[in-house]
Length: 139
Image (cartoon, rainbow, N blue to C red; front, top):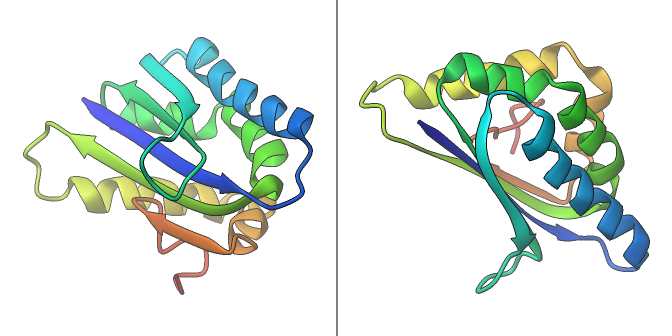
């Protein structure tokens, strides 16, 4: 299993309705992406981030389905312009020593095929984690 998590803080001055639209879109991902077995989206407590999401996905094929699903793309398009700081990480129960590289390769393939997403991620003030170093390899 792969527990894919993201944590984010929102840029100052973003309207409350835009925040809620983005958070609801994160929830929608969990409801509509078939490979998501369970999920939680909500306030991030105990750190420097405001919101967090965790999606439980069975395997790398499901992870790819999650990454390229239209619901995920929608969240990126409406949510990333609001984000200041972002971190993603994955917890896995697979002993494959190449798992981190395989996950990073999926993210890179997604960047390679989506220039608009690549630009949105490049514009973030801070970006770390399993999908990093990001589209330009400089983070």
